[in-house]
Length: 460
Image (cartoon, rainbow, N blue to C red; front, side):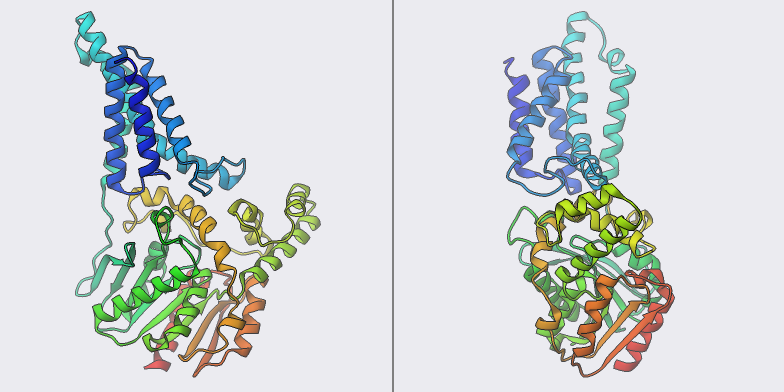
């Protein structure tokens, strides 16, 4: 029986590694993780009759978990990196998993050991449990369990539509925020930028005025939960998801064609979807329009390297020289580019914690935001680099509109200018917003809404 102190945590570690290799991602997974870990801890504590179970049981669990998920790839589960994003991945990946699994096991082991110790000593259990350390840990577990159980929701719109829905995309549930003051208004589907990007909060908070004129549907791109199940996240699944959600909205609101809005990396998916299925769309609207990611990254690399040399940032210069020019096959190689682009191009970044800490995202989603982006980037970004809209989308059969920031980065603006000049479309117009960069739609929301109203007027 004494072997249970190791065997039970090892078995649970293997199970957790197979079931939730990136840690619990949903409320149900989190609550089950807390419950099972606590139960394993209690069993280990009772069998061992020692508080040492508080150390040995979690250690056995962690070793088994890490060995089981070795085949799983991504920054959140790879060897930790001593960098900004690496430390964030460590805290919100392994650290969060520890709170949902290791911490309950420690509390359970303390309780299990207390049962046997109190029984032998003739003392009542509450006296032992009131000790400050265990009581604090138990309270923390309870607070976490309560927090992750709070469901997602969105503020209602009187007389309109305000709902969070899921759309089946071949066994994967795509999440969609749908909001509008009049369900009969034209439908506008927004496909956000980076792989794994979540923009529901930003869209509702900054672009609420669009809800007066459209039914605004904001898509969460296929991400974290899809990484360890088929099919692999790719360019093609991204385009297919866009079409799937489009058809859902057409049926849901009884409209033959809808408006398609896409940003940054999502604009590659949007442009391809509009090119392949023009019969589904009234118009395509690109903002922060991407065209050719390898060329974009090459420009970023050259500009950041020049900036590092000009500012005598020797460490950054050495890092870039050692890496050589992109493309790369992993996120951490791109980290110097991602981390320094805003400074090099003097870009303000309106993305904020307030856009993530919203009712539309449960607590676990909020905590997993960065790791979801990192792991999904790692999985999808290399495949996204095979697109060049100048070659792949020389024409669109629907009106094409673009809303760009006047201060857009050179890596985005130069390839876009070339594509826009050659693009053939029934109608084509470029809106440029002053004092705006890559996230123009959120940096200058009033100007962006005015542009969308002009687009609506020109297509109805």
